[in-house]
Length: 473
Ligand SMILES: *[C@@H]1O[C@H](CO)[C@@H](O)[C@H](O)[C@H]1NC(C)=O
Ligand SMILES: *[C@@H]1O[C@H](CO)[C@@H](O)[C@H](O)[C@H]1NC(C)=O
Ligand SMILES: *[C@@H]1O[C@H](CO)[C@@H](O)[C@H](O)[C@H]1NC(C)=O
Ligand SMILES: [Fe+2]
Image (cartoon, rainbow, N blue to C red; front, side):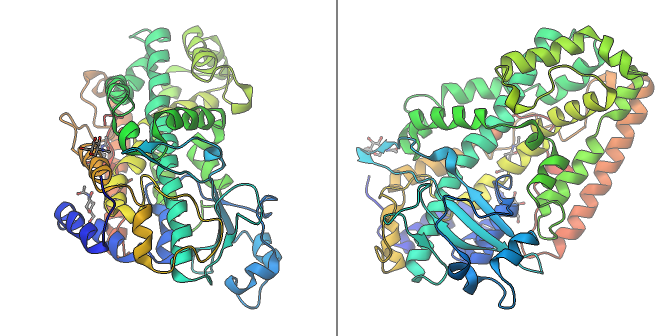
């Protein structure tokens, strides 16, 4: 129940677990660097939050003079904003959420805003961090020019906030829980002989089982959230509810999401490049063409119309602000929605799941909990060693890492993306479609392997051979 005494102690646990994992070792050597902090926003376990901004958020106490030293000398804040080189991480969803009590000790959450800048080469770096949403004298803006310990502490707070956001919103809500909504609606509304039932079931086959297990263990009293994670159970449900009310359909559709967040064309965002390619290959217009000859055919398919209205009314609580379709008017609309379902339940899950052990094994990079309040002034820490008291206790650290390792066991019946077992996929016109997709996925796998050979830290997480066909763990 004690806190960590030294980085050497943490090393011992780390090396025991990481063995030769090149990514985990890389994380441990680079976690303090600004470049690596930016890299993780694009290609770490939570690549779905960072977004381009054209205006500084009004609740962030920064101005052009303050930020000037961290921007290219010949440019200005206004210029950089205008040309789309300023990005933001905003954890407002954590604001006011009550934190956990671990080993009898109060834990703390923050709701940071973090500004980042991307240079001509595509290198993204943090340039300002405000730990709480409301500006004020007790909510300083930390800068890269602050003392090394102050700046590192501010970045750790962002990373710890990212841990909560990643696990609950990017991982659990946006893949597991959405998968469950799609699964229940499919079982309720699409008869087994419906071609979309047959196509979708393979991608939602394992979702209910893992979600029931997760609710019975991870998210139950005395489970890992309750025992060892900063938000605790009460906080977890509050964050999930808020995350759900902020869901937007466009953020689930890869091309729209990448464009809206301004990462679609960033040469250093491998997540974006690979996600875009997988989405294009998965795009199901071929299937839809087989069964629907015109938009009218779609409008007249009562079963599929009941399916989407069930998803809208029950799964998304009838909330129109989420901009989910309430009915399908066209083949294009239907194809896009089905592609989104398949992508969320397979590729997106891999992007947020496979990454978690690699990036989190070195706990300081992603503190699961923070056991001291966020600093209200600069100079509260002087040496890096003092940051150790912020980390979860030794036994809480171990329990989080055990769970992450458990979630990293390959599932017993691992099925790679679009490797179908059901005879349905290999008869008649389906066969051609399946073979085409499989061929394209195979060449994408080769392309990603090639690319990964020439970059510092490989990004294999969206390589089709790493993507499981449905959410299974
Ligand atoms: C270890 O590192 C490699 C990258 O070198 C990665 O592909 C692999 O999935 C990692 N994770 C585990 C848990 O082995
Ligand atoms: C989840 O990630 C781990 C690696 O961290 C991997 O071994 C496991 O197969 C992944 N599960 C799925 C369903 O992708
Ligand atoms: C840490 O150890 C204490 C004493 O054995 C135990 O009561 C507590 O539940 C443990 N905490 C965690 C997070 O595992
Ligand atoms: Fe998962």
